[in-house]
Length: 137
Image 1: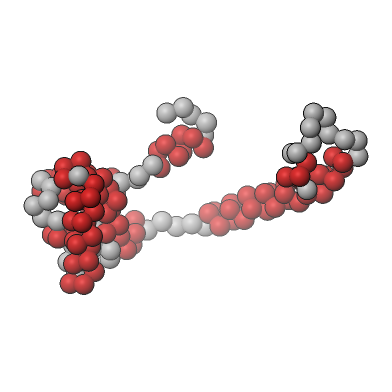
Image 2 (image 1 turned 90 degrees about the vertical axis):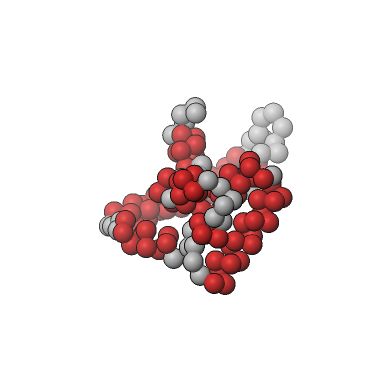
């Protein structure tokens, strides 16, 4: 109903806008309920950084593979970076170990260590927060 009302040219016809009231009320009710549920879900949230780090370590470093792919692409090109990362990821999945060991030599050790730290990798989070808060980045 609401989507259909967008097609009205110029002024909306008399009476037709009444049809929008019920769906709009329902949308507002659902949005309010969702906000209430979000508050309820997060009010008792407890964060355990050590457990989070343990879970991230379970991936053998694969959690930061996107970040490493971008860095590798600058060094060896996108296609070769994909090949290297795919091979290294398969090795980690099959044999265990970590992505850093599987990619040893592909990047300088210090840089690879930096890239492997998930605590320094927040992706586009800062830009998304700025956009959500209406700040121009």
